[in-house]
Image 1 (tube, rainbow, N blue to C red):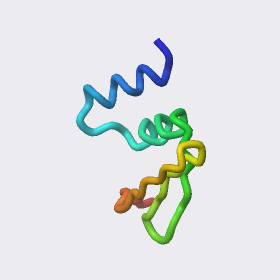
Image 2: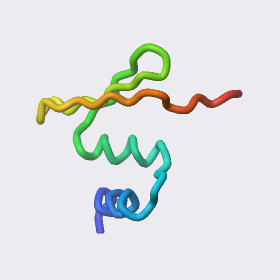
Image 3: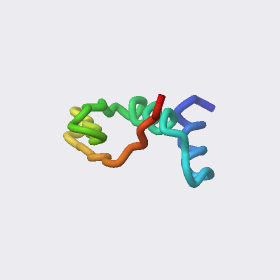
Image 4: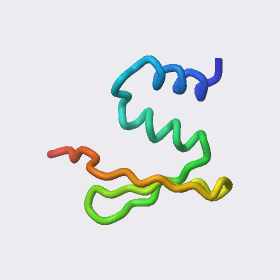
Length: 62
């Protein structure tokens, strides 16, 4: 089973995946992460001409 298949299986079985797993899965699916203002992030897949916005990511405090 490939890493991509394992991540997809986790997303199906785990209600709240880890942020790093989300980033890894989107990267493997061909998406690129673009940072916006504040906590805004946009994921773009240039091959498929698809984009998705993500807002409200959690901020870590030192």
